[in-house]
Image (cartoon, rainbow, N blue to C red):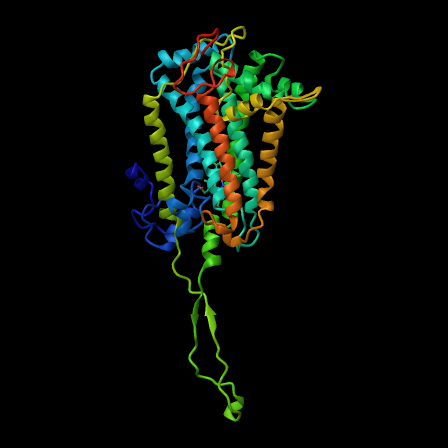
Length: 450
Ligand code: HEM
């Protein structure tokens, strides 16, 4: 790989004046100028600035979770291409085409596993990236002009929702019992929206029941509109990071930079030509010593981005050799599995939906309304406007768990722990008829048990 990269590199030999060379990579730029040129003349590196702050590149600052999320999206696109050629989006043939992938087509099982594991991993990575941004207060602006990090956070919230929806639409495609009933449970939650709920569900699934219209709707959303929207918003997200002067950590370096005090030598007195008595007023100049806090984006940033991307692809590819993708019986609207569970990332909502039906005299507040509409709506709304509610100083940004943001970090952790606990309960501790079972308890044999 490195040899191929080197082959395209300009740093192998001197360049004739005026010659246009394909500057694909520059692993060892010989000067700052060449490092800068590599960025400006290369399409792949256009998102990079010429110089980047060392501290913001540290693995321990961002854990490169945004890049890992992007790498997973790239892997999903790459592994999705061969699947496009083999999958048939029709209720009669979808299941069989996935079965062929599993049992007939060379490497079909592996490609499907790569796609599936990358999809689940992307949901996890995007949530971890969000948590990292929150804990470092990285939606706050610093010293630069025209910064709008709060908008990048809002774009991020949209990316999170798109990622969840992208995964959800893919869930249905194998057209087996697991897919069919997970999507049935998931879309039923949408019907709890007052007045328009049933219409929203109808719009989503293209009718009253999940059938061919739903499959084609989910398929087109999954392969065209949602990936297109993620790609476009991601491009904007990255452009904003550049416009905002890099990561919040870089700003912090500048704001918190300790100026070096230097006292100029007393070569002049200001004592009325020495006629009047008294000492000269002390003049202390503050000069900001600029220690070398930046490095060239090429090769330093570029190398790390490549490492994070290749490592992500390698881990998913290796896991896919060992982890089989589930494929149950073909979808059957007449046989309801018991229990029927939503996709794992919506299980915390399903848990709330089943636990929160409240009876007040003659009135019943439907749990689906609280768990499916009020709570997620509130959470998403609050999360979107959070950068404007957080009034902590700029210095609390770009650093993990700043003291000034202690309370909000604590609340964030509590909410995350609650969501994780409910997800765990939904995944492992709910058995037939949504009864509670300890992980080591055996479920009774009931019709439709999965
Ligand atoms: C498809 C989903 C997403 C992708 C591919 C993505 C990608 C990235 C990348 C590559 C960076 C550069 C720093 C890093 O690697 O951590 C970044 C920064 C950032 N992201 Fe995301 N992101 C996504 C979703 C989100 C979400 C859900 C949020 C929050 C709601 C968010 C908010 C931000 C912010 C505020 C920054 C600037 C961070 C800083 O200044 O330290 N992003 N994103």
